Length: 328
Image 1 (tube, rainbow, N blue to C red):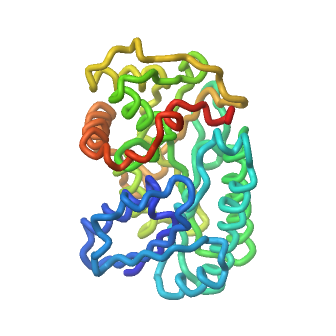
Image 2 (image 1 turned 180 degrees about the vertical axis):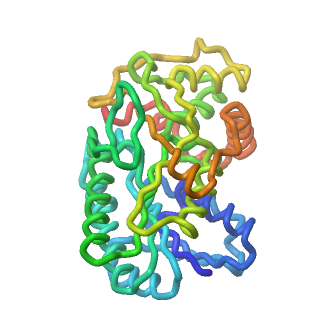
């Protein structure tokens, strides 16, 4: 089998590629990535000479390029996205281009070529939940520009399935953590700042709640869905591990042996959703998937990886780590 992976130099995409090539000797992968924000060539430097791996620099909005690459592959997984919510508040246009136009380009081509595609979406499409948990049938209710573009892509996908019977599946996952995440996100930023002995900014009072899942568990779920998921369906992926941001930071500091005096509360960003929650009983039941890495083990693995691979982020300035992106 040959897969086309879009956005494979990013956090989740790179972990997926490494995991698949390690566990499936007969699998071949083409990775197309525009090398925009969140991409890091170092993420896949260890497989650049792997005979089963090919990298192509390109943008998923390039119809001619994508038509050619998709024709060479059996299935497509679309990881490519602008995903940093804070940046979508300042300038939504890159999110519209990548997350909607890019998805449309892929969707149109896989429909004509009769290929299967997995669209990697997000729990943020459901918006903030005071109580309860979102199922696959819950109403889309995005409350920031990033989430709105991902929800828009889902609506477009649903229309293609209903109109053209496109072989398309949507996955929505909760907050990922683990190796190779760009340091604009909470977990790697906390580790890198704490390692330097610098203050760690937390929005508001740190009470915002997310469900945290180790990236390898997410990757395994995607592969199961790719092979066994039903066309036209969506699958929620979660670890049932809801923790607020302050607890996350305190846990990282505990693992690193650092004082929580490093914590600095800063102005909250506009429209900051209080809580996300997904019900993953569908994938648990229908595809026999469940998490393998609990939170304590996952955080220890993550801290250990960043401390051993600090050179990955040597080019990231202190100003970038300490900045409040939605204010920039």
